[in-house]
Image (tube, rainbow, N blue to C red; front, side):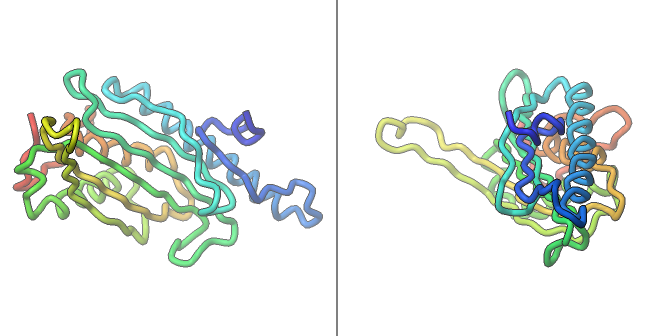
Length: 220
């Protein structure tokens, strides 16, 4: 286990730029700020683990080249005992910021879900899928800025020994956004979980509103 993993609860934490011995204390200040953010990020994951019986959370490594500091979490959504959606959320921190970030933090989300063929073919799936994200962020972390991302329809066909298997239809969303100036990172974890639940066709948590898929039909 690395030193970063021991000091922050979010899985896969990295601190490639850590230099506690820097004379001006700048690197130490950055490491301290990230440690606090990663702890809040991990606490948000733990809170969602307690709230969502239909989710399982996994440890994954954080990327090492996107920012000096990073942490990552992953989750799988289950419906009727089946795994129906998967996702990961990455927290990046650069004390100097990066172009397009609008701050020193950036969140990157990925979600993939199984869908029925008619839903995958629906021309509004991209718009609807993006609205799942923006609705979730608006409900939990409305101060977010500079959202960016894509929605992709995925069709997987088998060949050779797998040619008798039915094609699989999937929905994929990749997105990033900057949290508010003083972020509540637990709220951003909650928003990502709402997105994953919406993609999986799961009912909303008590106290939250359902995110309706418009004309795109959800598999039952």
